[in-house]
Length: 115
Picture 1 (cartoon, rainbow, N blue to C red):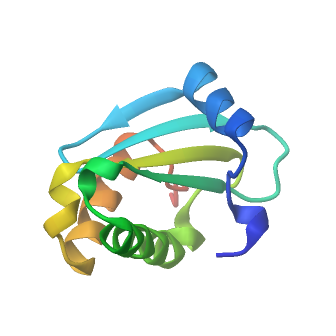
Picture 2: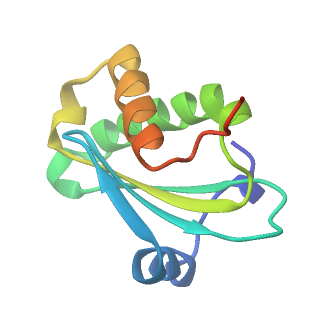
C-alpha cells in the first residue's frame, strides 16, 4: 500500500480517535473520520503487543493490508480510518480476516453505495 494511503503520524491517529466514530465486531475495532475533498481513503493499522511477538504482529498487519487492498475499489474516498486488531485475529487466516473486515467496514458504512 502506497504511503499516501496510510495514516502515519501520532497526531493523525489522535485526530481520528478523538473526532471520529467507532464501530466494532469481535475481531476488529474501526475508527472513522470523514475528510471532505480528500482524493482517496487513508488507513492506519494498530496491533497490540499483547497479540504476540513482532513476527506475529507483522503477519496480522500484512493480512489486514492485503484485505484492504482487495476491497479498495469499493471503499469511500473521503475518509480516514484506523483498524485495531483484537485478540481473535492472531489465529485467523486470510479468508477469515477478509470476511470479518468486510463485516465491520459495512457496519461503519465505508463501502460506496452502488445503487
